[in-house]
Image (cartoon, rainbow, N blue to C red; front, side, top):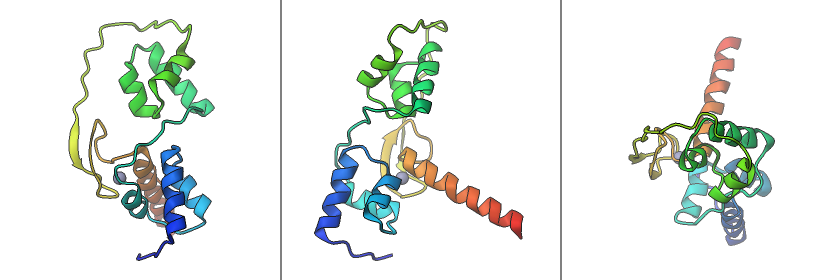
Length: 149
Ligand SMILES: [Zn+2]
């Protein structure tokens, strides 16, 4: 898996990452068979922008969670939206489920099960949504392969 990247490709990876592009989008843009580990390696320590545009599905999730009285922190963890974006999409929504929200999720300090990157967050097994999706995708593929045999 020792793909040699040109400095221009590395630069592109960094730029796309900082813009908040997903790993899949980065791979697609470069048209390369990159592993997540490679992307992680080149983007380590870079600050990532939160997407200012949420998908329709994410907007629904934001609104539903907000309505249920979830905190911005919790909504952000799930959707990767910035607080400003959350505010934008929850304007005028009544928090019907408003209650004292005492749930304080534990912070995990560990290495990602998928890419091995060290992280500290509420995520239980993976450092990022990308890794979570990657694993789910792989598992789904394995399952369908097993079914075919
Ligand atoms: Zn990871």
